[in-house]
Image (tube, rainbow, N blue to C red):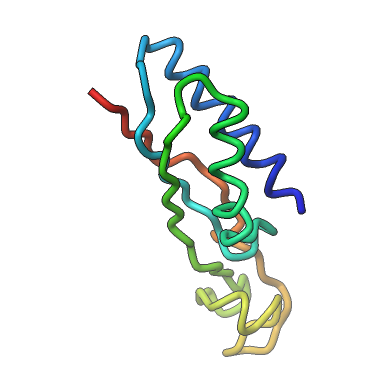
Length: 116
């Protein structure tokens, strides 16, 4: 389960930002995670409290919110966007595989909410 390592990295980055901005406590972290990013949101939710309590000065009781982003691919042949998970690399319209992933592989810290 690499989600624990991901949680540690996010906590480290947010903790450093909180320290730099002289924030006493972070209330909530919102992430955007693509559905083909290889991150399993429920595993990240499971390890988040432990990572915050044991590895952070500013995130002791921090809540995690995950926004899951749909994976979308683009076909170079017919110039159409399509659902990646349901179709893989094959365009459902023209059946060609000259496609690429447009979004859905992200793992981004979208926002950080601090306590006042």
